[in-house]
Length: 134
Image (cartoon, rainbow, N blue to C red; front, top):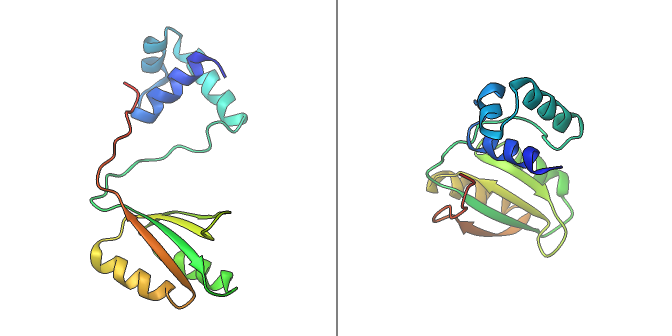
């Protein structure tokens, strides 16, 4: 991957609605050349999918530690919640990591539900400090 592809990806991360022509002007290529580069990045699985990033008032990182081997029960339970943004089985101390956007009441219900099978630790996001490319 070269610098132009990185520039294209950074522009798409900031605004996925930019046209190939608009991106081309910013990276000094034609819109057609940008389109070909994007298609290649999709084929090479560099771009997994296009999405919308929502700005939620609440955001949590929840580590799940199993008390037993009822993995499928926990996975089914967690996948029921539309507030769960991502859900990963991981190695290390935790068995799963969940990113979510629960309000306080929803979080309480979620925790009570998964407590049937697991312990947890919750980190609440206070501020996004990522310096997004300009």
